Each structure stands twice: as C-alpha cells, then as structure tokens.
Amino acid sequence: MHELGIIVHITKTLQSVAEENHLTEIASVTLEVGEVSAIVPDYLTDCWQYYRKKIPLIEHAEMNIEVMPAITFCQSCEKTYPTVDYGRQCPHCGSWETWLVTGDECNIREIEAQ
Amino acid sequence: MYKVYEIKKRVFEDNDREADKMRGELRANRTFLMNLMSSPGSGKTTTLKRTIEALKDEMRIGVMEADIDSAVDADAISETGVKVIQLHTGGMCHLDADMTRQGLEEMGTEDIDLAILENVGNLVCPAEFDTGAVKNVMILSVPEGDDKPLKYPLMFQVSHCLLINKTDALSCFDFDFRACEERVHRLNPEMKIIPISAKTGEGMEEWYDWLREQVREWNSGK
Ligand SMILES: Nc1nc2c(ncn2[C@@H]2O[C@H](COP(=O)(O)OP(=O)(O)OP(=O)(O)O)[C@@H](O)[C@H]2O)c(=O)[nH]1
Ligand SMILES: [Mg+2]
Ligand SMILES: [Zn+2]
Image (tube, rainbow over all chains, first blue to last red; front, side, top):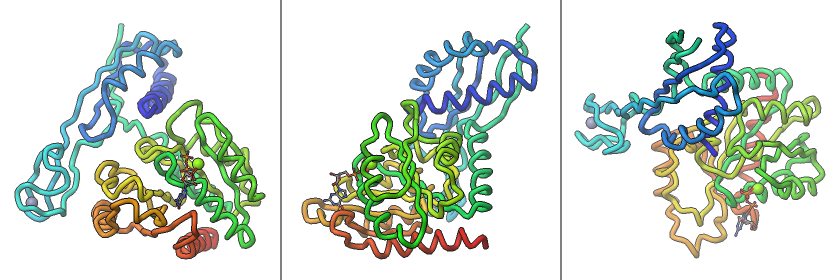
C-alpha cells in the first residue's frame, strides 16, 4: 500500500523532530496534501489509524489533512488555471507549454506536542 | 500543555536526501544502479534475464529482486548465474532509499559494475520514492495500451528510458506508437524510447547499447 509507505516516512520524520525537541507525546499532525499528489486522504487517515497504535509517540495523535488546490501556469499566455479541470493543456490558449505551480505537495505542516 | 511546532517539511525530503547520498557512494564505488519499474507482468524479469545473458561477459552484474511475497523472480534470475538477492519490502508497494541501501549492503557492491533493482510491479508508488538509482528504466507493454502516460504521469516523468515491450504482440492490440511517443515526450522530452520484444529479442540491441553507454559513463567517474 502506497499510503502506508508515506505514513512510515512521516513517522520517521516525527520521531526525529521529537528527539530534537524532547517531545514525548504528539496530539495532532497537520499535513498539506496536493489535489494531484496521487495520495488519497481517506486512505492516508486509515493507514494512520492503524499504524499509530504501534508507536507510543503518536498513539493518540489525530491526523488533519489540508487539501491544497492544484494550479497550472501557462507559459504561452501567462495565465493560470485549475489543473484538475483542464489537465496539461491550457484552456485559455490551447498551449501545452504549461507547468504545475501548486498541487503535488505532501508536506508536514505542523504538530501539536509536548 | 501541548504546543504547536511548525515543521514545514516535505514528506519525501529525508528519503530524497538518503538517495542522493547513496548515489555519491555508488559513484565512488564505480557501481551503476539501475531501477527497473513497470506494472505487474509487463516483462521486467523476462527483459532482465535476456539483458543479463547478453552483458554478463563484459560487466559484473548483481540483481536485487523485490517481490512482495515470493522468490519466483529471484529464482528465474539466478539461472543466469549472476549474483541475485531477494529484498524484503515488508508488504510495502515500493522500495525506498533505505531498503535499497540494505539490499546493496547485503549484496556487496565492491565487485559489481551494474546493480539492477527489479522494483515492485506497480506504476504509482515506486515513482514517488527515489531509490538512489543512477537511472530509472520503465517498461510499458503493448497490451497495457498507449494511454498509460496520461494515467500515470509521474512514472514517466521520473524515468530516463522507456522500453515498450511485447512488440511481437502488436497485431493483437491497437497500440499507437506515435501517440504514445508524443504523450511521453510531452511529459518528459528527454526520455529515451526503445520498442522491444523480450520474447523474440527484437530491438534488444539498441537497449543493450543504451545501457552499456550509461554504465560506462558513470563508472568512468567523469
Ligand atoms: N508475447 C510476449 N510476452 C512476453 C514478453 N515479455 C514477457 N512476456 C510474458 O509476460 C509475462 C510476464 O512477464 P514477466 O517477465 O514475469 O513480467 P514482470 O514484469 O517481471 O512481472 P512481475 O514481476 O510479476 O511484476 C510472462 O508470461 C512472459 O513470458 C514479450 O516481449 N512478448
Ligand atoms: Mg518479475
Ligand atoms: Zn495559455
């Protein structure tokens, strides 16, 4: 499972953050997940529910997911448009010279901990 | 009392750093690591077997197999006589840099010029995790269809070479090479595309040449 692998990586990062800051208990984790990141938020939370039970540091931590909209920029007409609706081709001018500005991220934004 | 800590970190950051570090070590060791990815059944093991037979007399090859729960592929590869080890993904759908490092350590890279990783059959997950490979090679087979670049763009973006396999079966499928090539190059203009049949051997020479050149360049340390 793809989402489980991501949870394992998140947990590793949290463990090193906890060590640096002498934290023993994390109450919540907030992620930023892009609309076109190929990550399904529901699966991610399911995996989290399952995996956190194994690690005392995050045993009671809630996972909050903020979905980040995907926006593409067109090099030809210099306008932006919502990626999910139009894909790689610019709806303003038909150009394929476009690149994703935001929407593929998977970041840990913040945690609440003590 | 709980306090808020700002982290602001990409989830893949640690893995990417680990992968870069590994590439540095591979370079120092003069070992080329190739990561082979595709959907299940596209022909990774068949292509590897043939490739190993063709190249094993000119370079020292080692293979890491990443089946989720069997050793079938490792057994098939070991028939060629090269070093092969089975990696343990713990039920995971991909390999990350840590797991690849463990594999390389188990295999030993001192006497290996070309290390090959057969990744888990899957077009989504392996693309997101940099394994530390020098080059990513992917296989798309004719029966899967020419629309795959549209459905799994990331895999096509992170790969350096695309083998379009099972060309011997072209007559049974409406696979449009031109359309596929156009889609792929739109996502990744640098992609080397080579049509092959791992069954009949058609097109394989071009593939061997590409791989030889990559290994030679990397291992020359320039
Ligand atoms: N017709 C034809 N069949 C092929 C070709 N290459 C592989 N096959 C067949 O496709 C099937 C799967 O091939 P494998 O090499 O096992 O594929 P794989 O990608 O290693 O599969 P997994 O490791 O299970 O993901 C086998 O039955 C092969 O004989 C080809 O070029 N032409
Ligand atoms: Mg295989
Ligand atoms: Zn435009």
